[in-house]
Image (tube, rainbow, N blue to C red; front, side, top):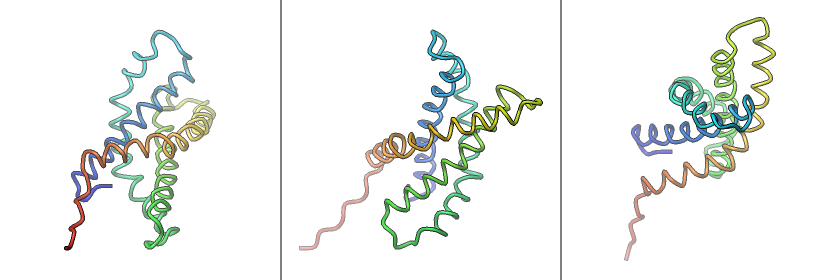
Length: 157
């Protein structure tokens, strides 16, 4: 979303922020359970994860996801179909890369790396897709349209 680069960057930043926050809570809870360090553990990793997610989103995943989506969905398709298709491809790409980041950050590249990576990848995908489609995507679009309302259509008399 966004009618210019500034708005597109704000939209992407909001989307990444919400996904990283929710997925950070999810991953910390999976790893450590609910405990009195939950918020501290999430806060410690939040900024690095957000920086990595923004980089991956802007530089890698967005271009690929939109390219794949528009090979499947025609430009004349309803907007909801375009949004859902792009969102699904975005989740796939971001989960692959952010699970790699998380695995490297928490386990390093050891002999059990692939076991950890594929386990984390599956668990993250299970959470990230519905989170994006049901919560974060609609929330971000709602907030964005309040921040940048579409210009009112000119009424002819």
